[in-house]
Length: 153
Image (cartoon, rainbow, N blue to C red; front, side, top):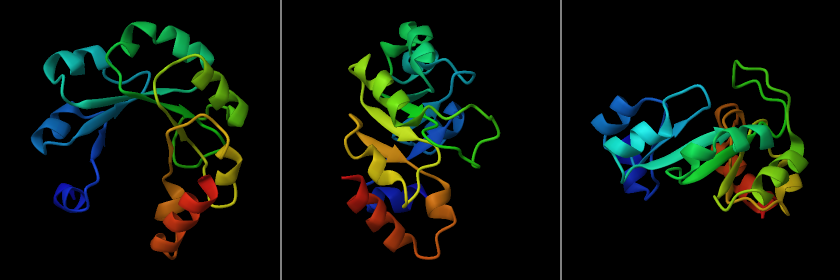
């Protein structure tokens, strides 16, 4: 997979598996609140791009020590999602905006983002979106990606 992402000029991120990220020379790693501490990852690999999930303003505040080594925040779930086992209530667009207003880090909105609701994030102060099911359940991935990009601008 990494061969394909490199060829396309797209960085590959591994979800909470530092050993795998290093073994395949991934460009980045993303960790959640109960995963590996970003500070430990940074000490071992300061050049690795590190993302941290921060679901809401309370988690942002609790994560302050780790934010010094994090490159971006994944914030949400914006909407109800079926992709994750944890059932954390969605924060909505307003919750994403609250986190963004309280940090200088780039925000990637996550959770339940689909073709029919991505436009609600158009005016949110985010760097981008992350989606799983919109892509994995699509009958036409190229069209889905195009729609997400167009409606999300």
